[in-house]
Image (cartoon, rainbow, N blue to C red; front, side):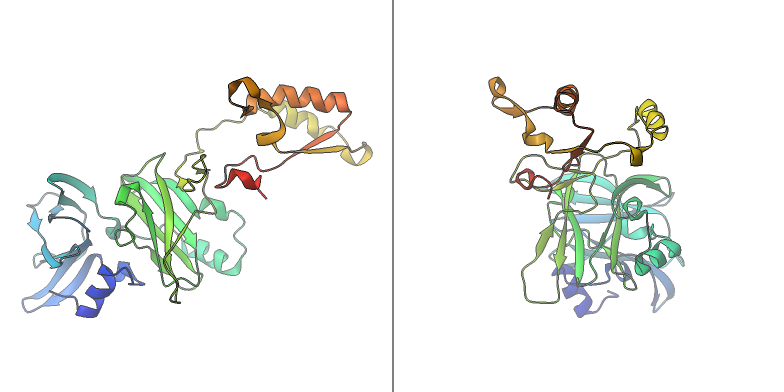
Length: 307
């Protein structure tokens, strides 16, 4: 065993503030010389094996009943590519270890975020589909500078914050992790442990592209916007030819979710496409020049109207 009891306790109790310094592959010094230790936190696992590319599987030793495993490979000198074979509830699955992958945030990204001048932060924070070292998954990032530990939790890990504690960048308070194998539609939140005695907090992602739509369910949802194609080229071209400072302004503010409903269908709100024609006709009839929409993006509590 290469870990001290304090590090083991912090990992199994979900209190370790720097999990990437402990989990995954790390160079160690043994009585026989340099080696690489691989560690994994797998709550509920009965057994875990390391599957190095092109080499025989290596069983991992259980360091703690809560599911902390380790193996030391004396024939290795540098961290290497591998997968994990996890036996849980009688089922065997192969997964990629999140803790063997590097940070996805560049030095320049971290510098701009620390300055507060990263004007495309939505491309880095939140949940994004990425391929890293040939492995597809989702990169999660969140700003939580006062947290002691942040984990991403969801259906994929039983909402257990010990499974995926995130990497902290101390200079700017960003926490991040790449979770291989995840795709669109995954529900998730961030589990945050603060420095006070307050209980654990489960927080929705402020940069999420989608949320659960049915209150009181408030989880964020992994969504891919890359395949959405806008079709408003003609309108944008016409707008460029206008002179708005010389035109009259009459603004109608509307919340589409409550503006008009369909009584014969359980009083449901109109869809976006249903609203488009009806709202355009209404605005023209009322002599309105501009329409201002409240919160058309998904958010966790529909009753707030997006305020």
